[in-house]
Length: 59
Image (cartoon, rainbow, N blue to C red; front, side, top):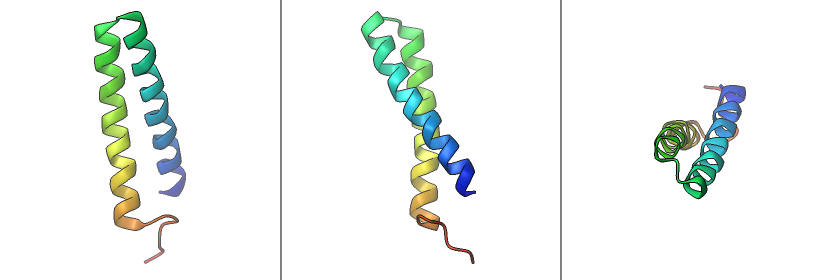
């Protein structure tokens, strides 16, 4: 789960960067999809860290 959380965190960061770039280019559909990716993957990473801690505990 640790490596998956790191990958999802990177996807979330790239979603945020994409959102900012799409806002600059005034691409509404790009803003929607990038922000959705940022929100979903960011929420998963946040809740995983909140629930299991970082680094995750082994039982």
